[in-house]
Image (cartoon, rainbow, N blue to C red):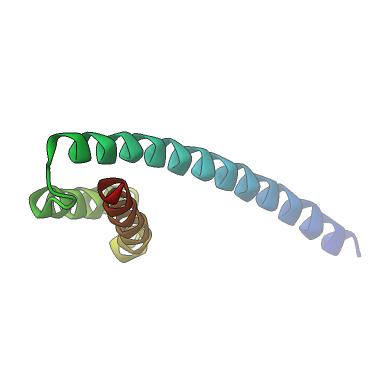
Length: 98
């Protein structure tokens, strides 16, 4: 039983660490979206296109490299990044249509 109790205590520590990472991730994503909101407003104000395929290609390459440096499967981060990028493009279109 002692081994099970120790395992539960260790599991709790891991879960607390995961919860902290999740909170930090939410904070970082919120900061990112606040910045991309300003980007969308700037693009709309000066008539720049909503998407920038060259920038997106650079970001994909950068995320792949950063992921590999951290020992993370790049497809995991690219999937997360694509969700954010798609939402940013959608939001920039909304801003443009105002």
